[in-house]
Length: 524
RNA sequence: CGGGGCGUGGCGCAGCCUGGUAGCGCGCCUGCUUUGGGAGCAGGAAGCCGGAGGUUCAAAUCCUCUCGCCCCGACCA
Image (cartoon, rainbow, N blue to C red; front, side, top):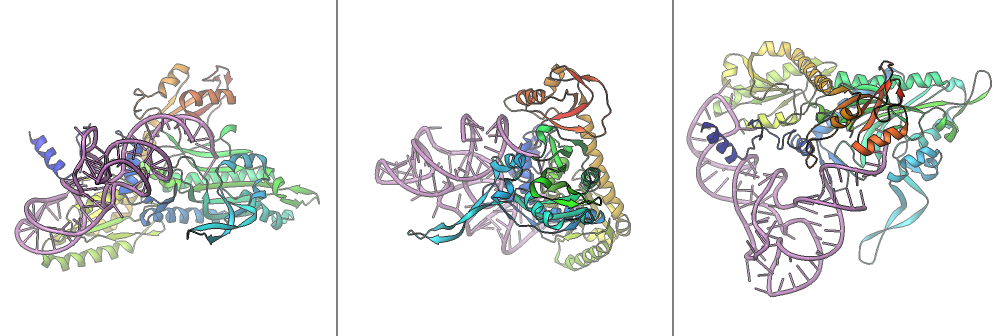
């Protein structure tokens, strides 16, 4: 009876209750009810981004853009520490550049935006019509190998010019058929590194080094455990010799690629004529690499850490670390509470959290407890409520985003200031551990075809529940088997793991001999 | 691009079958009350019902076309 009264009260307030566990959640539906819809709602509720009026393109709002800025800062430092310099290349690529590398053309041709005119003219009905046709169409960059290669060919003439280590932060456009905010949009922000080397070994080393940098970003900063591996031929970057990848498991147990690094061999050097004279006075083609991560990482953060109350941000890259919420009920409380709040903010802001100043938000809107939920949905790591009674005992009332919304505790003010860094570290670690546990619990060694098919088949085909995960299974290496599994189950080989031990077994699809397990999963 | 679903104030939705020009909850604004916390009461602002055309005395509601979003598929570093 009491439950129903409560439920009715909540419904009166328009608050939904999670159906299966009878717990109220800030996000409807919950992850288990409808994962894709939950994702959309989190993006909306956390104010990370919104769909724009341009098809397939998003508006990244300040709370979301701050994440990108923080990621950019971390990576930029890492790159620079390994000798990489930033530069900027044109948004427009002459069509003939793209035509230089056959596989590359094939890979990107279907999703290119093409600029064919250079001005607008007023038509008879007052509307603008494109005029001034270009002699050669320009392609809006889907990636910049070809145009950067053009520059590289001019910059490199001697082995003394190598290695050439360049990165650019920019936007790219790929006209995707089906878009999902942050995960696959027509335009997105990324970083693309391009290097040229004198030897194969050095280029390969650089390729793997950058993959390591990405792994460090993912694990130490984004708290996303990743598996390093190599892509199979069918998933390789168009034009690359080897594509290396980081694969992470999202909470719906699907895989998301969170960074790639390509060893391009001499393919692009040949196409762009990147040649140098060696110490032996011979003309050689350079060996090149390219590597990138994009705003897709924000999608990875959402789907790795988010819960039924919204976004959960890892402190290391959180848009902001702490929100202070003064509780002012009587007018005479206002001035002491605000004074206490500002003093606390100042004390916190003077501290550093892994090289970054602790960032503090102050929310003094007079809307009672509601503001607490706004910040929970936005995923801020630490929430602090400050009322007259806290001030009387010189303490603060603290909630952590890695714990339940009601598990708040009173902490002496000075102790809170002294331990905030520790608390943020603890949250960071908790998020990583939680994500790692989810991946471990949903990763299986599978050896029989039947088990494999069962693993990847939902019980309810009409409305598939969250199922599957990572299957470590043997694969003979043939594209036919790969395709068969994809056709049957929509499951692909995410990668051939780097650290996998050699072991003999038989291919999950055809039964032929295999020497190593690969990771099969459904993917974004 | 094929199959399915959906577009109604900022958010979530009802109304559509059985046409009569909008309603609910949350949020927002104002006032009073309350005062350790997702407050109560009263009042209020905000929607040309995705867009265009058609049928009709009259369309959110019926018909046609179109745009966008979501899911599945195809496709995809």
